Image 1 (spheres, rainbow, N blue to C red):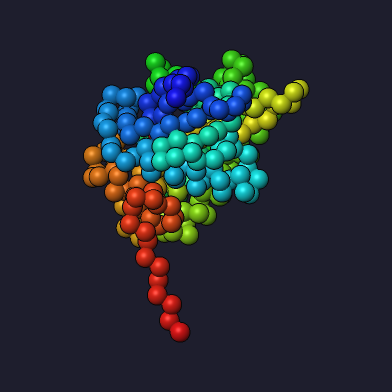
Image 2: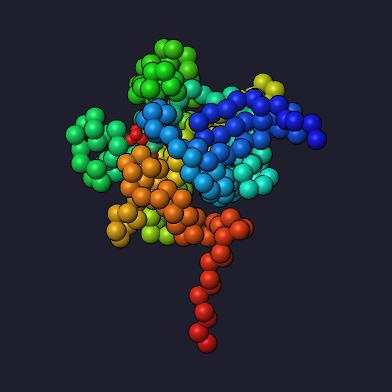
Length: 253
Ligand code: TMP
């Protein structure tokens, strides 16, 4: 079989040319990085879990009418997505203080925010993805004011969906990051949720114990990352085929 053309390799994924024009194959690696790749490791099984989990979240979003780039999962590590032009911003939504917000503003981690906060970071590894304001985004032409309004409403819909899905399995969605892409259709342009949604890009805390079930386990050396992601997948009923199926509760007559 002819080798596929690699389009881009990032820290956690590789993009290949898809089978048809306008499609891309997104391959999930086992590589984990933090602090702009200063800390790195290979975590066996992470790519398989994130492929499944991102499929689960993106499919759910598509079903409630939040457009995403996701088409279908192809195999354990790959999914077919629509090609899009990624807006060079990381969109962060926060429900509880944590991470860089806690550091920046001196708010203790875990404090509930008065309302969900949407922040933008400019995607540039050399600069360490700095926080930017709408003023910068408009002035430098990364997105228009209309785009930003649409991005905020998409991000808040993703937040409502993800918060509800997580709450139902005893997990608090503390914060998350998404990326948005543009898809051109003739004269029209639409914005879609792109990249991935997985425990690599969210903060997920067990509601009862506060146990961290996301990439902070790796960032902060808190234990086994695969175990944490497997627990999220198990609770959501999203398990790789090779894993032990979740036992169904016995029905009592
Ligand atoms: P932060 O508190 O470090 O700014 O992170 C906010 C959220 O964004 C958190 O859920 C982790 C996620 N995130 C990424 O997905 N990629 C990144 O490069 C960073 C810094 C954070």
